Image (cartoon, rainbow, N blue to C red; front, side):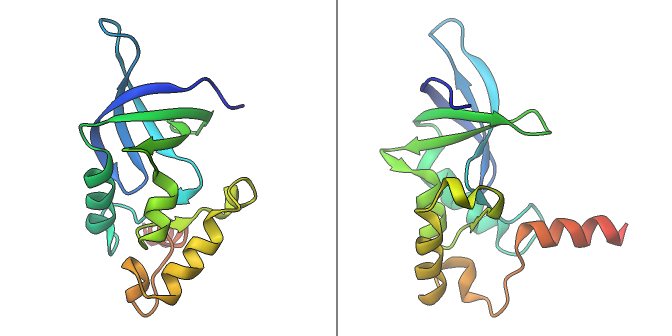
Length: 146
């Protein structure tokens, strides 16, 4: 369920699709862990993760973000539509080749697959690699390597 719009200050970037923000009225701001709806970025220690993280930081770190929470994931993070500097963060990351369209949400973000196709065609970002590994496959391989 989509919630009301929040204006938050992004105070930390975890990776290319998740961050920490302070949300709420002045004097009652609370920290929230957030994940950008519709995308999946390389995980920490995965190839291209630092570049993807830096891209999100350049757009959102230490600036106000417009956050519209949609649901909560199993880690307790709010999955949300996010805008920083007037830009849709999911579109920004996918168009620059900094994240994949998260197939679980592809039907709710039909605007993202064409952006990914264009990024791939132009070899933008992670698409410059010959065979980039999607984060969900990387996580699966890491879990089975233990």
